Length: 334
Ligand code: NAI
Image 1 (cartoon, rainbow, N blue to C red):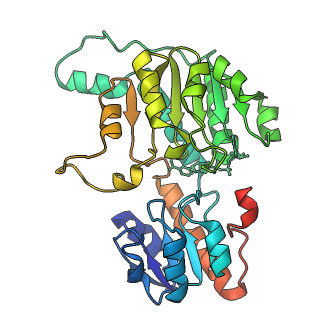
Image 2: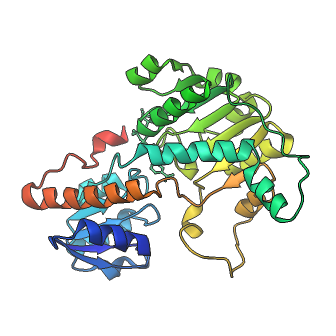
Image 3: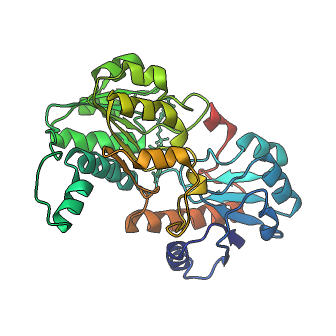
């Protein structure tokens, strides 16, 4: 099929061209992000392939439907950037890659945890500068610490499996407790219990109306003093201003982010020669106990191979049968 691949980076081309070696599909790459201003660039494409920074609100979807698009192929798991209700109303199908490599994101969550705890970025900079003082680099052992996992789907479970190896006590909150997690020894508790007991809280729930700003000032107020919060899910799960207040008061002892609420204006671009206008993001960067990466949890060879293959399989299935098990249906919104 003729596919417009939006928000293309060099690595997207590399992995999608490899997955399309048989030339089954015509892949046209666009570096621009799809949104209300750019919606006309994909005119005449039956399939539009998008990523997390593309905004497919009702207005964009309406334009796409009028321009001849039939299928939106997300090359990611989350679908919070697509108005699914509007898509259904317009008869547009939406498919995604629900599980490409949960281990990639899980391992990145652990990297943030370890990097923060043992102060690796700080230590690296010091040693490069000939400063071998250990003052300010004090960490703690993960063994025996309580980790609260919010959202025990594919990624949350992978995080639990790794942390079990560290000897952590694992507790979790999920409206649908996972039997595999229970078998692993994870204890499911209420959110207030999780906040009160956790030394580290790791977020792995999708962004939806129930999880938007889940970590707000009321939640932070219930947490243990000095708690470490890790978020590799979606930025909107955290009310950033509330967590900044928590960092200032010392209630939050460390914060590791791979996602940020306003990341659409920042991530996946080189802005090193520009002045960043987002004061909240800039404030986050001033804390010595905050570690931020720019949405790279998924960024492994294994995950990119799987994402490209599954995306093209989704499109082929849709082309041949009009049905795909990876379709994002209204059911998933509940
Ligand atoms: P999943 O669908 O396998 O698991 C999500 C889990 O969250 C489910 O068990 C669900 O019951 C639970 N959940 C739903 N509502 C909840 C709530 N209100 N409170 C607590 N738990 C709730 O999804 P998966 O694959 O584990 O991914 C999780 C999230 O990670 C995705 O939605 C996506 O936003 C994010 N992600 C981030 C990536 C990155 O590069 N940083 C890459 C891939 C996904």
